Amino acid sequence: MAEADAVPDQIAAYMASLSPLTHGLNSSASWDPRIVAAYLRANYLEGVRHDFYGAYVTARDVALIAPDNAFAQTMYGFMAAELVNMGAEVGSGLPAERKLAMITEARQAANQAIRLDPGYGDPYAVLALTTPPFDWSARENYLRRGLVASPESQIGQIQIIELLQHAGFFADSGAMAEKLFAGAPTQIRPLIEVINARLWQGKPVRALITKGEIGIKYAGMGMQYSKIPWFAAKLFEEAAFHGSPGDAESLLMRDPAIRTLLEQEGVPVYSHTAVALHTHRASDADQVVQDCAGSDHRSAEVKRTCFMALVALGRLDNAFRLAALLYPDQRGTTEQARQQRWFQTEMMPAAYLFIPQTARLRADPRFRDVVERIGLLQYWKASRRPPDFCATEKAPVCNLLNS
Image (cartoon, rainbow, N blue to C red; front, side):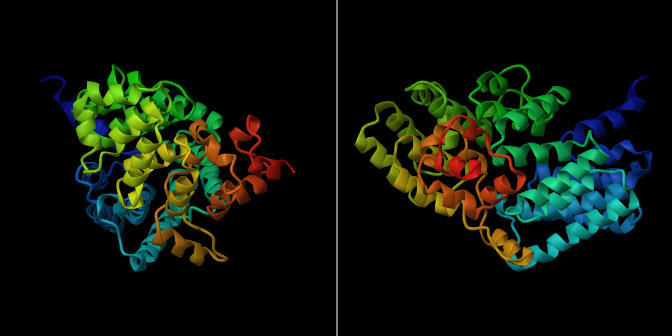
């Protein structure tokens, strides 16, 4: 009973771990009960219910109530941006004609937050989230400015880590991910970033996902990682593309819960991929090609597994055909044109173009078109900074950058 008074603060801190947008709550001005209640409710709606529209409405309403509060304005901008960026993944995406208006709302709220509190960095992450994916330099500039204002901003750190990862800079992004995770080992987003950082650099992640320090314990899920498709797919990714032949088959046989979760879409992509990577028989590879036909309409986990499998099995023609769907042309002469490209089709994270397991793809002259149409070739040239793989590979695109 003597500790009862502290329970509300403990609950708030616990719930706040669901979102990286927490820096503003360090300000006493943000501890308006209406703002805190809206923050917790918006995070619950987004993180638990996957109700991105409800989270947006909650944040919009509190921003109207507190027009002079920078945190409330930033939360409004962030939830509007998340509705555009993430809603489609869970079936609540906006139609293309509504996205532009939502982007405008998010940017106006972020700019209002910056005017209210120039020393608050999180709004810059909102501006980065609402910039077309093609504009890599502009997004990086927003994030760097935000981190200058608020070096401890978790959302700013997460966004810059992901930008660097998807631009092929695994060494720099990996160091940042490790530092972020060390400071917040029980939070879900730092855990996700460090799993990706280690996996894409060929470091083991199975123990991180299945033992001791796993960050999903906070959600009351214990060690039930096999109930979350993303974690299960990462275990398969490590076994299939970073392990020894047969590791992926062993994983699926050893843990049928994972196999059931991964193959709930009906097509046994994972089982067939595991067999083909082990046997390297043409008939088994043909089966994977057949399974992956039309995979651009399936889950993100299936998309990336198919892409990596086709490259690993040497089916480069099929891999480039899939890349044309997963990495569509993002170019446009104006920002509005680039926004329209962005709204029309969702792009798969570009990091899979740069992992060691897709080196065959980079050695092919067709790779240049892939990175050029999503803006990376232009970004590398403008920044005079070639991606990490150019230090060890003589890919045609590296020769172009070096010249």
